[in-house]
Amino acid sequence: MADVRRYAEGTEVAPEKSRSEIESLLRSLSGPEETARRKRWVESEERRRWRAQLLLIKAKLEMIATGETTVEREFLADMVLPDGGTVSTRIAASLAETYSTGMSVPLLGAGGAHD
Image 1 (tube, rainbow, N blue to C red):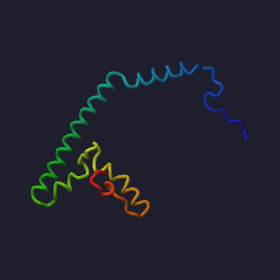
Image 2 (image 1 turned 120 degrees about the vertical axis):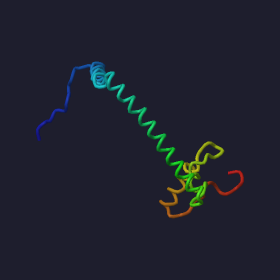
Image 3 (image 1 turned 45 degrees about the horizontal axis):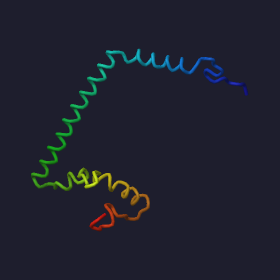
Image 4 (image 1 turned 90 degrees about the horizontal axis):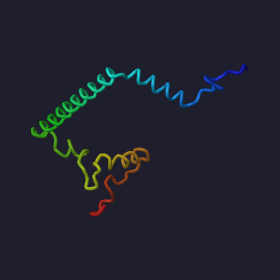
């Protein structure tokens, strides 16, 4: 089998020079116009996501108002617990364990008043 040299094997170029070239290359690819374009995209995406969130909340509230669902069903996962966590983050690990082992585990603690 022939010896195959890897790219830049045995190079004498200092790491600082390579790093400087990389930084220069990246700066040239993201000049002022690219930075402005990226900023506009981020701002546009933020506006879009807030509108989508409003649409979701309005739809949930409409379904609650007509009696087709409940506040608890629509918002329970996002309720903030006294420790600052949410219901969904608290039970996620327990659900994963339940599915992986096939055995039920307490979702929000053992049921005591001080869990």
